[in-house]
Image (cartoon, rainbow, N blue to C red; front, top):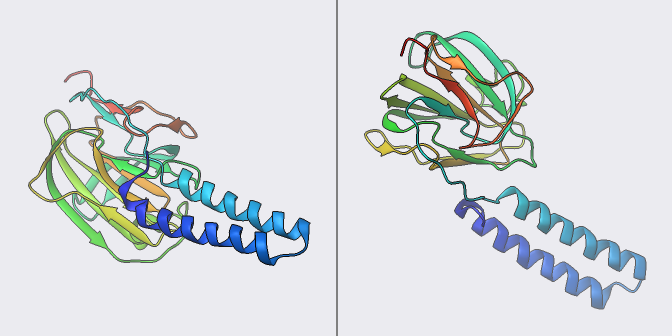
Length: 220
């Protein structure tokens, strides 16, 4: 199953790859070069298909857990000053997506969207310290029953050139459902209350809508 954001790109790639294979078959007389071009074209198609894949993930929503919004590797867990919306301290968990990861963004919790904003910006590499505040990005805030308001931020990387965000202010959303896509993009930050119990570690691989990244404090 492929994400709807990739349908146009997949179709265009398929047409170009088909044209290359046919042209090489009839117009390239050197055997090894012909096969090289055809194999390279097929590899490109496979890479595009795997990038836009959208595996179905069944989720039983839980108000007590925050799920990873994307697939990838945890690269940041720290207490920070969140200046755009909360203007105060929060726990930040950042997940880096490599080109081979699924790039669908999923809602990390069920709740009501209270803030959704797009910011144009730079295309620094995703692990750059300033990418969270200077790169192209979207910021979404969810009001949840147990955690209060949480914030997640889609951040474009060096290769990303378009962030797709479906979140609209006032909407009620369900944990694990489709929240957007980062085309050839690379990082999502999640900002949580200070008393949240972080359930992941630096370097851990997480799966969107599957891996719990935080739970409510014991006194909840």
